Amino acid sequence: MSRYLLGRFGQTLLTLFVMSLLVFAGVYLVGNPVDLLLSTTATPAERLSVIQSFGLDKPVWEQYGLFVVNALHGDMGNSFIYNQPALHLIFQRMPATLELALVAFALALVIGIPLGVYAGLRPDGWLSKSIMAVSILGFSLPTFWIGLMMIMLFSVKLGVLPASGRGATVEVFGVPVSLFTADGLAHLILPALNLALFKISLIIRLTRAGVLECLQQDFIRFARAKGLSESRIVLVHVLKNTLIPLITVIGLELGSLIAFAVVTETIYAWPGMGKLIIDSIAMLDRPVILAYLMITVVMFSLINLLVDVLYVLVDPRVRLGGEN
Image (cartoon, rainbow, N blue to C red; front, side, top):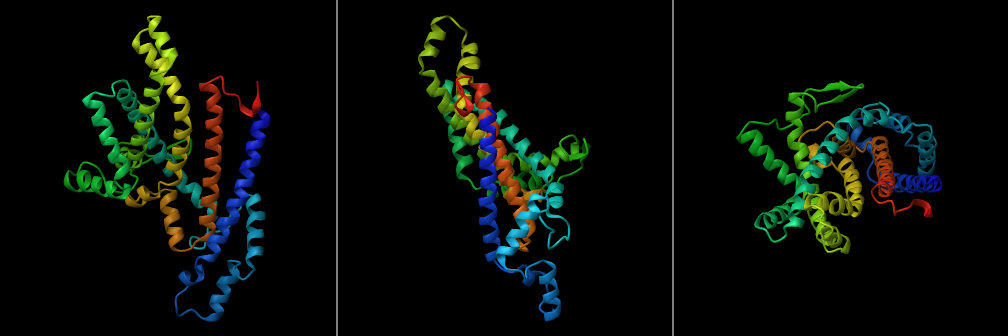
């Protein structure tokens, strides 16, 4: 296990290096932030002063080298727009994004797995067919369109839920959380449900496929021949074996919820990392863009590592690092 973890750590470092190189080159080649920060009436002296203060007068390879050295010391640079450390800005917004993603993830699991199991156990029933038909809509309809329609229905027409913002928060271990206040929960429902819809559809279909495959296995027939109750067969044998391949997808989907909640946060003006990165891209705020992408890579790597470890807990036959 320790050898495997060290190997994965090395892979993460290599991934971070390659991503930093690609992202830095891509951000450097797209536009000039000075053009957006200064007015057209700025003098050449003022323009030169801003360029030097941001370090943009240095060759690109030197800028990248400084970025890597500073990043190894926990410094991703200062935002061009806010004149604050980029990591500080991202960590300020991270609790809002994590809360939204985790609530959406919980909704996807709580709704998707039971519906998928039911659809797999009774594949020919009218309710199962209805569940699968509705799940197709979750794949087909664009997230931004569903978000706008939900705002139109629940906020504009019915007036039962707020359309934007995060609402009131309370601090839990120094972290602001909106889930534990009535106003915050009301603001959280629409964006979390909007973010979860695609994942609910995905989990329903994967769970159904896993249940159908598992029901055809010999150990299920043997369990029924032994006289085990149907509920025990489903909960202990079917569900557990269905979760093994499902864990990989669920783990990756959690990472995508955190990294790609940009559309939902923009629609609902949710003050998370996604909205920050959209604003930063619009203003070519390079330090914030780089810091966000590096944190995203780290998140994906850690989640993938956690998924591999969960394999061992769910299925003891799986061994990490070639262990016997």
